[in-house]
Image (tube, rainbow, N blue to C red; front, side, top):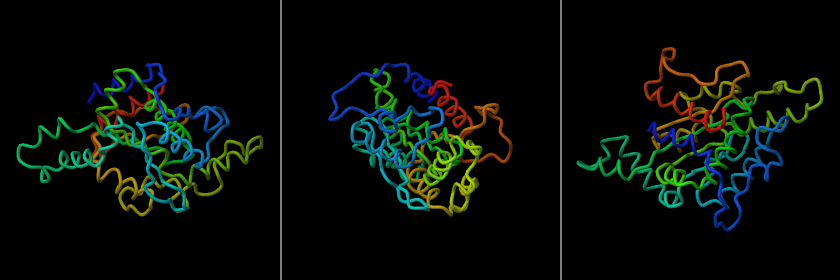
Length: 278
């Protein structure tokens, strides 16, 4: 696993190569009209949908699915990113994951074959706090680089890995925050937080819904991604101020969630930051 993470970190070093496609892979800039992270620019949720829909249509490595509707009726997306042959057999690999996670589901002597046949499953969730705008900008960069990478190393990684990328765990908040920001540009209120909750019911506390599971956005992530897939690695993308910490490493404050390996979690955060050029 550490070798996989190190190799993923090097993917960005490979220059993209144009391959035969039914249509060219769209860059984020071609859809948004700006480079993700450009000063004073934020996407709408419809632009997020448009980009990932076009990426799905252009790249055999990307399969985008709508898991349901948010509290305010926006589509909740996940992009599966892997080698095309893997994407064509996702149910098979999900079954392998379930058997690896639960010995009650596998036959005697089946373990070694499951390990050989299975994939490394990585869940990347983003932007549960929508004022942390880096959370819904980062997925554009991750998806673009994974869809374009053509080195032998990149192909090996994509052949052995399934990435489940959630562009935002709070799509409603993407528009609540973005609409407010755009409406206040060049005014004294520019850069301030919206005067309403950026999650209709829970506001900033939507990340505290992981025990009660009261919101549809939480339930989509748990019921459609965490539970059926048992990912080996989970990376939840947040953002902090310019003078705050970037990477958290063990030991953590008690109580520690017993179902999460803090070393893997910290390592994945470090990988993502290095890969994005931080």
